[in-house]
Length: 445
Image 1 (cartoon, helix red, strand yellow):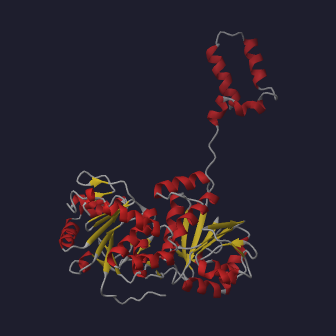
Image 2: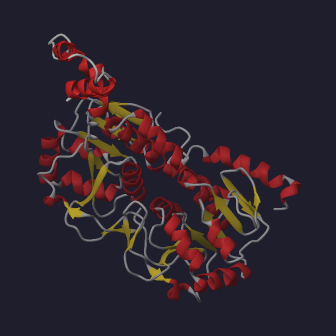
């Protein structure tokens, strides 16, 4: 192919050459010493097909009592990195009630993918979920079979499952800090957010879930891809008691979302607020049917807009996600709901480009936001509070955003208690930044 291309070019340029010169040229081009160097020829390189990207996949296995944040953040981050993610229910493919009551629908039951090869297997935390996994002999056999084939990643209390089935025995790991003594006999314990030893990846808890997932991206793809995803999610350092369903009564919040919502921005606030004894309702803007989020996670709402219209809430939370926000902006009925709640003094909190929906419905006009919209004043901060409006720049600040709501609805002590449980070390520092920020007289907050 290369020879024909070069020769035909020479023939077009020198069509008046004598026949014997053309034959000599052809002989030189077909010389064995010349052909091995053809790969460096510009003409040859143009004809080479690009190598297809190597297929990478991950299996996230979870069951009743799993930490929803660790399921969702892992799935979201890996899918952003173009890794094929399958959510598998350990027992079946029916909706799974997670640790803080969120219902997540698995893609499949584990039994349907046991013979499929994956690049990584991910085990989210959640004590109830991990205890079920630890006691399941068949699941242990599955992990032992896969241990030599792929990465096995466990976060929070997930390493308890590895210990129960003798996976990666003797390797360096980390876990939720309170569980450290449980691993002394089996592993070499490290006090790091993420630890990789061979094909075993472990991490500490919910607040390290971004770093955990990005480390998996780095190992399956490369560091550049992990940094690209981290930049999109605004992650500055990419790699480095069962809840009751009864209402708590005194404080409540509603998270309203539609198709295309950022799943992390639904799940993280719901989890953090419920840990703070704040009653949380997850409401589907368009109905009670299961909602497919931005990265294909399916969440079942507790209620719909009609159900929550006459309810009183202390806070309304609007996740980001472009399709989700556009749906909110177009819904006149939702606009009326927001305006009514604004007059009641309810906090209205929104993520990412959620302020577009607020602007469309004339909510908080003229106030300070960290999103540039014509009718608001822009402030370059991760989280901005102006009166009863709270804005957050994106997924990576979701923990601080939710803890700020806890601080406003409960108190700083409660927010710090929850931050300590979730290992959100930066909350204490951010409190000082909020305090200084709020004291500025020009902000009139």
